[in-house]
Image (cartoon, rainbow, N blue to C red; front, side):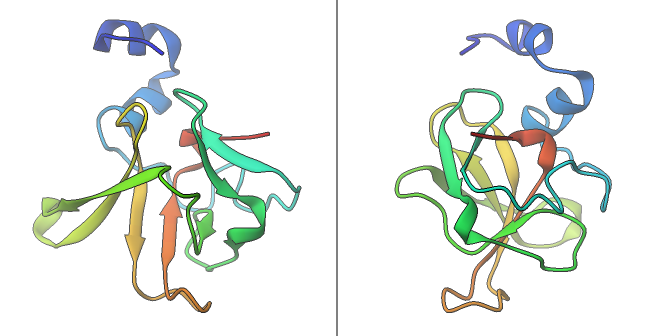
Length: 124
């Protein structure tokens, strides 16, 4: 795992760096994992930390991969008051990278919708 922002810049694509390290967002309906249905574990692209089981993924219709439950200890929630609104940012616990946001409007029993950027993820 890179230790400095310069190392992150060398190891990530410009889009990945913008999203993972600068808290950006990929364009809706463009991510490679939006319609992915393979079984496996979604991991943090930056550090490989296991984040979500594929069984937790659902189609939210929002344009980003959505999950209803994270793996234990995989993510941390951080208050985000940017862009004139209050949201809850989702970060990787291992490397602190931005993954997306979580909302309390999910359609499953957890009531959660982890709305993530595909560029932040890998599938193993």
